[in-house]
Length: 397
View 1 (cartoon, rainbow, N blue to C red):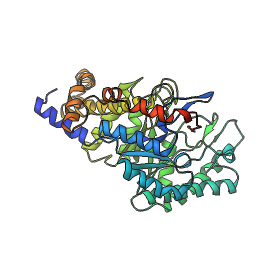
View 2: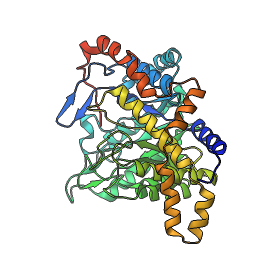
View 3: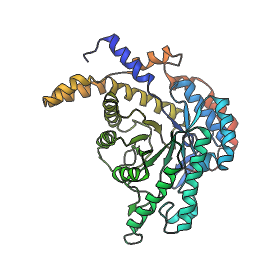
View 4: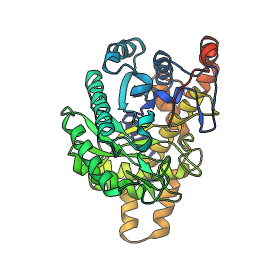
């Protein structure tokens, strides 16, 4: 790269200082597949344990100050649980992040929630979203992350257009209840659990629904929620260009929504996504993007997988930040394809681990957070305390 060593260090410091990542409470709980749950002795089964784990990840990495909460899993009593969460924030030094309504778990949602043919069930689902927004207000949380399992499995079994209208009405109602500083992030997914049509199947549908809901609604991109070989960075570029990119649920996949740890299958894809974001930021776009993780650690240790993911995200973010965008623009304008690609690939292949380690050391953090976790006895102590109740049911979708 053309930058001097001092300029590279300064750029790396600036990039890492600006990058914070939200981790999910459910990433610390026992999860599995549709065939069964895999139990880990150290898995968290209470919100207190989830906050403790999140705080330890933040202590090791310094970049995970918030933990996303799932309403029915973490706040089963709704708004009444807000004081308890505030106490946990004070105790552990991490804050509640995005609030995630649950519109897929109850039996009444068998045929949909916000898109259910039953007006009574739709009303109940809307009330849950409104209650979730009130929880977010009580905790001072900006984002309400909305994902629906709504859809149908057989052609002709549902009116697709009716469901669009019901969904638009519900989202407008939700948007109207937002505080001035809150956002409604609308996620999409092409299939599963619905296998014929999903009501919010792609970024175009999510974008149109956000526009219909109101100016405080944006799109939430889950990297696992795409068809194989889909160009996610192009989607990101479009959402940046239209001002609709609100946030991410980062993970990785080999086949479908596998919820594997970030970068474990295709780190180059995350690098390409981060490049588009850095390019947007350099043009004043995407300044409010929420970077969140959404993974199911079925086989890996919960804590190790989370720390590993945060470190990987930092490294890929840093690689993308180090692209010489001025020179890249010259190559792009002159259509020098090989030179442009080599500059781009060169940044990806740069070993940024020493830069990241130096940044952590300068901030009083372990140079290698994963090694520090393994050297500590945190997981072992948690396993001893929690092991007797590690079989407790913990839902995950």
